[in-house]
Length: 311
Ligand SMILES: *[C@@H]1O[C@H](CO)[C@@H](O)[C@H](O)[C@H]1NC(C)=O
Ligand SMILES: *[C@@H]1O[C@H](CO)[C@@H](O)[C@H](O)[C@H]1NC(C)=O
Ligand SMILES: *[C@@H]1O[C@H](CO)[C@@H](O)[C@H](O)[C@H]1NC(C)=O
Ligand SMILES: *[C@@H]1O[C@H](CO)[C@@H](O)[C@H](O)[C@H]1NC(C)=O
Ligand SMILES: *[C@@H]1O[C@H](CO)[C@@H](O)[C@H](O)[C@H]1NC(C)=O
Image (tube, rainbow, N blue to C red; front, side, top):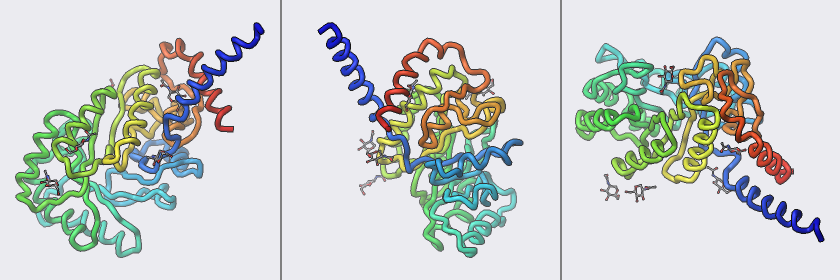
């Protein structure tokens, strides 16, 4: 008799843990690669395109594909990063047209990268210049080739909304994006509230979350953010694509080591493995916080149960 009660309790705990395991999709067709070149590209790029990866698309902030990725099944999405200085420049349009004429499938392109941002990677352009460039080089891709267009990807700050509104005003009805790319750095609550605000502002457009992470927090916080946001983005039907930032090594990460998908040695971290639809690796990125140790016991139990259930 004495052995029955602990067995029952174990069974109840197992049942709860099993419900927890199945709450999340292991893989998701929405996931893509936000490609950032690094000095380790030659050894690291194949990780994203390996047969065990669930990624379906990628962008690289440029108009042309990345050669190490272009042979894979990942759909390339060209980006018009900034605005050329010449008002007759057709480089972006011509490059994408060349890809299409060369037989590549180009269902989507992305607009400007953080045009409202003038530090850390933003293209820093006026709404007027962006509108002119869009009408000349981006809009014709839709008219001529049926390419679906991603609106300018503003920063997650309140200024982003202001810039995008100025852009639409400057367009005077001549810019017709099909979806809104979203960037956000911060907590899960912040991300969810930001996405809600974008949906409320542009209710008729689907969304791509093309850069997001909880920067500069502990490993435990990074992983918990990752788990919550992944489940949330998979559930929201109007978010059709997302790409986590980032796909690089922890020692060169500009969002803190614990958010990275690779360790300083180029191995998948837990977040990196989960993003590709794989099981946790246990590889701790350099700079990983000792604060996560307190939860390690439970993480091991949950991982063991999930493993056991999956087999
Ligand atoms: C998550 O899994 C459910 C059930 O299998 C499926 O219907 C849904 O399409 C999946 N979501 C994604 C984004 O893959
Ligand atoms: C997104 O906006 C639409 C239209 O306003 C609304 O019906 C829907 O509930 C919103 N979705 C969420 C998750 O807030
Ligand atoms: C969204 O679409 C609905 C139905 O087509 C339309 O009535 C509404 O005006 C649109 N809203 C915006 C902001 O474009
Ligand atoms: C994140 O989810 C994985 C399963 O996908 C789980 O093993 C892990 O314990 C979770 N971590 C946190 C901090 O929620
Ligand atoms: C994270 O920290 C790095 C290094 O201190 C800093 O450059 C970066 O701006 C921070 N990122 C965010 C989003 O807070």
